[in-house]
Amino acid sequence: MNRFKPLSEPETHSDYILTNRYLLLILENHILNKPLETQVGLIMPPGLNYFPSRPHTNIKFYETILVHTKSVQFEHFTRDNSDEISYSKFRIQKVLTPVEWCSLNNSIQHSPFMYQQMIIAKDKPAVTINYKDYMDAWRNVLFYQEPSTKHSWYLTFLKSVKLPLPTWFLTDWWTKFGPSTDIFPATVLQAYEKSNLSLFQFMHQYSIPWILRWQYATHEVTKNNLGSFTYLSQDIYCKWWDKFNCVFITKPTAPPTPLKLSEFPSLSSSFKDVVTKPKSQVESSSIPKTASTSINPDIAQVILDQLKQMHDMQNKLNDRLEQVESKCSSSNRSVSNRSISDDNIYAISDTEL
Image 1 (cartoon, helix red, strand yellow):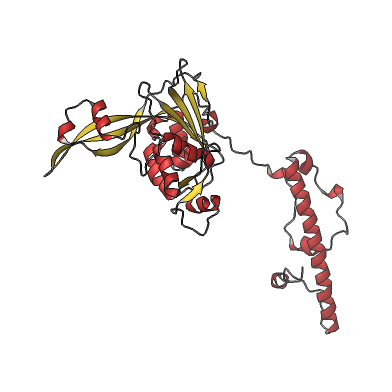
Image 2: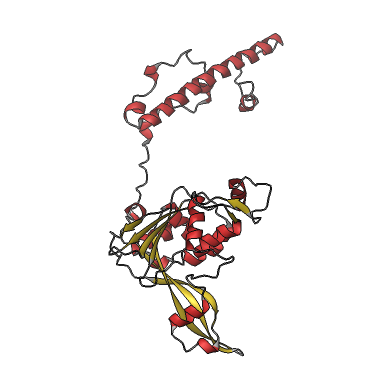
């Protein structure tokens, strides 16, 4: 499904930093003194680096699910004409919610955890899977490892990823495989601290990639009243991808230059000017030239539109005033020398205007 490509990109120079330690299980006494490779062989299923929730679910099965649902783009690279994968790319396109999973399988009325027949490969028969298998695909597919190579992953979020993501993805997958701010260069760390974003939001917004690698390890822990015990873990390491162009993140953005007061048209706030009946049409000569020559054309157009709206409103106000004066005259009340108060103006409703 995904052709293997020769590895042409050199290793990055940043150092790997331990970001998570995933506990597998406590080791029994009879295997404590054996080599790590032997311990792993006695504990983990053959050919797998995870405990499958159902039989016959290998890495290829999980990768096919993520490719079929258009959740992840995979690319695999080999080195020295070898068949063993040395480096892989993991571009995240989307993460399906339970509702989207049901909709994808035309079973919106059913639970996402009911098994459904799905054809995930054109040359293979349909398989029976559910949303739990989709979640397991995210959790397990990155635990790929060739026996004789130190495999690493290039991970990043594409702009197509829609938010918000399912809670399990953030609390499980992101907590396990997400990077730490410790991998950031100083300039990126400074930009992150000023952004007021969470680490996930920051990585998603700028599609920042990170490099991931993992390995088996054993750790001894001492607990009061319980003694000491040793457990097998998968230690996950991340580092910064040195080729990432972070200029657009770290480059300070200059604030827009505020417009000078003289660049705006001179509009009187006098109530007399508002109620004075204007000319029937807006004359182009009445608009200050600075509105079209000294400022942005888009802003000038907005000012022109606002001036026209003001003139239209003045016409409507004066028409309304004439109606009020006419009614007052018919009631034998003199209004010839009377000015209209602010209360009367505010009493004119938007509907009447």
